[in-house]
Amino acid sequence: MRLQVNMKSSQSIGDVAARFGIETHVLRHWEDVGLLRPSRDGADRRRYVDDDLVRIAVILRSKAAGMSLEQIAVLLDDEAPSRHEVLESHIADLDRRMREMQRSREMTEHALRCRSHDITQCPRFKGFVSDVLAGTTPWSLDGPATA
Image 1: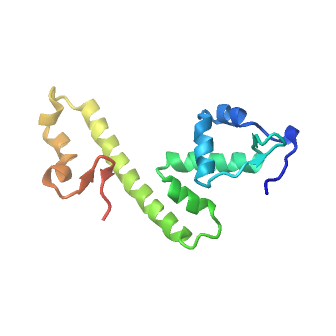
Image 2 (image 1 turned 180 degrees about the vertical axis):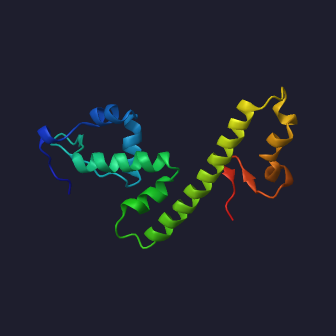
Image 3 (image 1 turned 90 degrees about the vertical axis):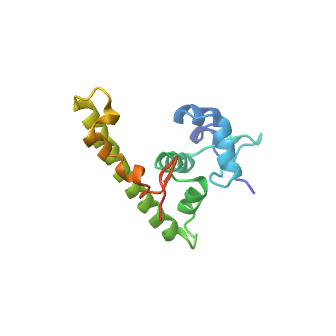
């Protein structure tokens, strides 16, 4: 059974989508996969209250950090038995991605300062990708694969 909500303390799907800069179909999809459970008004329209807005903010921040919707569902489920395992795995992934971002930053800073016209011929610049060239870092388009 859905609860009726006070119209003054809630927002429509359009208002919420505009507030967060997302399309309404995204909010509907998140509801379909169980991430959101907005109340309904007398005309069966979705009404989002403050708790829903917090959940949306958590979803957006988590997606920006690379979490899948499945991982976010576990994060938001306080009774999920695998919650700590999923979160520990995500932290390890964040650590790996931060190391890659740092390497990329160092490579870009070197390219900015390097006097070589063809950066790929600079021995020091090549050092930034030596692990990829040697095949010692398993690679995918999402970055180095985790072991």
